[in-house]
Length: 152
Image 1: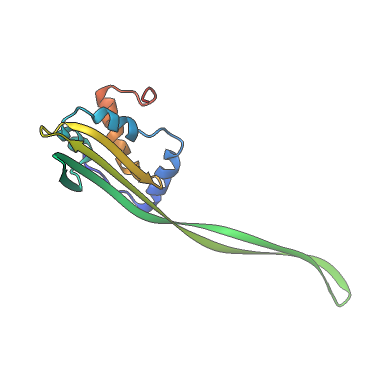
Image 2: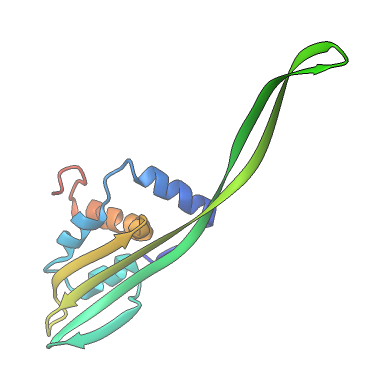
């Protein structure tokens, strides 16, 4: 199953909703140990990089990017006035929009032996960047019969 890329709005929703649900990435990486590298490729798509380090082949999948959140900030000004002997109160509001840039990244590395069997698996993430890989890992856990809730 290949990775799919979504719009920035969907990305934000997925990141925010994903903060409440357990991520299948960690348990999925554990489930890949002892599997042929083709299993990972079938679920995650082709890796972005492949290199040989001390006799092991290391496959790397990477994702990074950014998005901008824009939200309103409203200021209220209230007071009293007197004009030509008449008194009153006033309320004025001003709304400005503030933008905030957020970035995300994820790097998944799988090291295999000479037979292409996965020996080690690791992920590093910032800003919820591994969300892109979550559907693939969830599907893999389902196919392997490993419930996400029971995973360490």
